[in-house]
Image (cartoon, rainbow, N blue to C red):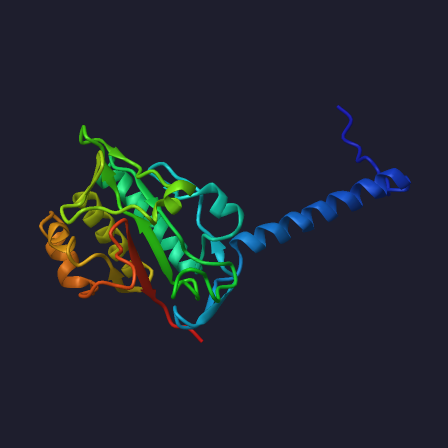
Length: 244
């Protein structure tokens, strides 16, 4: 067997040099893209009602047990949040895959990539506010997504009665409480607090009667008065993260 070393051959061919250049350029470009997606943590400014966001990130459009309220809304950039908020939301859904495997969930409006005014909302300006569409069951008691489309203002014009019913759908208060419980635990793991939850006060008693109801009632601040919009088809969550 010939063990002689093969002499080093420097690259002289122009085509070889171009190939190496393109490979290096593509690698650098790929690193740039990955840095943009997974890079700097977000910085929030001001408050949820008067603020902005730097390095905002978009929530995943869907997962094993959740979806966004609108693919169109994703396209036009209405589902951006603070990086920590994204991590909390995703972690909570992953927990619910194990704890409530037959339940499905849907999130709603969040905010713009750079925050600031987010019509028609009064808040959602610095990446710390998230709307979640209420989990519902159909007439057969099966966990389903509440339909959200242009005809019902992407779910925001749906009106549940005081018992949590709307047509063939009824609010799944067990799943709702379980989700809030999972959000609270995920937030704590990330060193974050839930500042408040806005949900129709007339529907809150049904929420607090569930398995996780007493816990979320004792550990999370809920709205006591009806907001400028009812918040029956969705619940608004504000996270508390230090902002500049």
